[in-house]
Image (cartoon, rainbow, N blue to C red; front, side):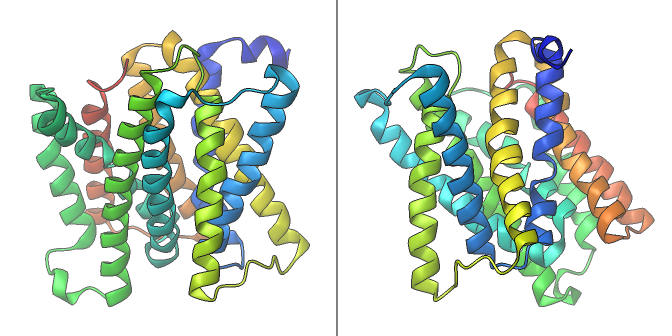
Length: 293
């Protein structure tokens, strides 16, 4: 029965989004540093993907034509994780994930400036809606916010910029690939990002020791389920579903992360903040429509 469901692209798309929505929860649950949790996410995810490639696909390396794009993707993804893991700890899993998903607007801006892809009127309308939503979440007086909260918001926006750079780099790499799934590319990037984050942890003087068996279990689930399985389920479904369904899936991840934040960590939202969240989610959905295949 499970195999039958996995053949359904809609099932794969939404199960993938469901798994990835737990990513910030894993970051909060473990008692290791932000750099260490990002390191183990990519390390365990890379191992899972490489095992899959060896067993199912045989030995396979990226084509030489895409190595420059993969190098760029590696740098942006390492920055993405470094910023985002800190944002999660400062402002919570839900809000940090919501802000990170504003990458859709940085993608639109990059497409306009770099590739002359003019945004549609829906994307133009969505941008100020997103800004209004963030303003309601943050509050009218930015200077009155706690330093940690302000830093978390800024790191969330830097995550969105970095994630957009990663997606643009991966898009360039995919232009030179005939494989319908980016497993080789994601596995390669994951390997090199784990090396960068491991070196960063050493430079920061941060320990990579996993203190408890529980932490090991959470980090393993983070790397295998959220990073490897979740990403691949979504990637395998994109060419078989509609643009609207892709937009809903992109929306589902931050929405579920907010829900888990409320249920697990008792995150409270005021009525104004809640309205800001709804506006931002709506803007993310509208902004994602044109980018979907």
